[in-house]
Image (cartoon, rainbow, N blue to C red; front, side, top):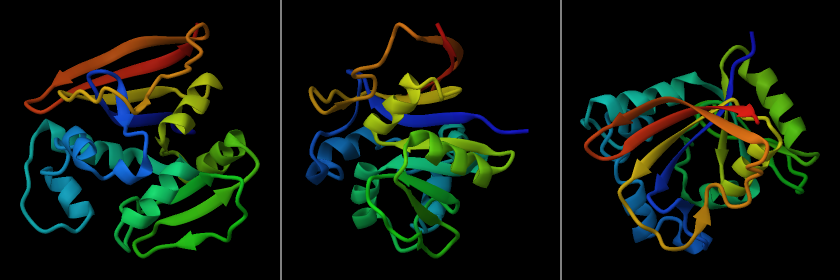
Length: 206
């Protein structure tokens, strides 16, 4: 049985998930947005940042999201930013399918992450990710434009947002340009924590 297609992101209260400029992607504003995840034990272990870390519902959600993911899809912009920032052992440990116009051989990293470059569209990337994931889920990792393409194509089953108490003012909005006329949401759960509020929705065609 095929798994779900989902995305999971952190979003500011005013609807942004990243700064506009790649140069600012690891800057102060982005760090504030993601501050909730850095102390979590599973996050620290997965990136080999040392022992310790917080446990609790935030940590459980980080772990559950990682373990349900059998393969991921990401856009070229996210890959370009991550290629410079990820450690040698990239934190995915699964196949990644990068939607791009570039032709490039697969790039294998220690720990089981293999980046495959797909230059014939989002549906082909998803088909390949589904095959690689088996009965686990496929995560649309980002960035915002890639997530939106999958939402507007009716290819997302579910998504989760960690709503962070931060205001951006400008940047990349998660739902900028969404085809709201064809997308309907059904709430699954809302889980507040001391740092963020986790919101989960299923997606269906309106």
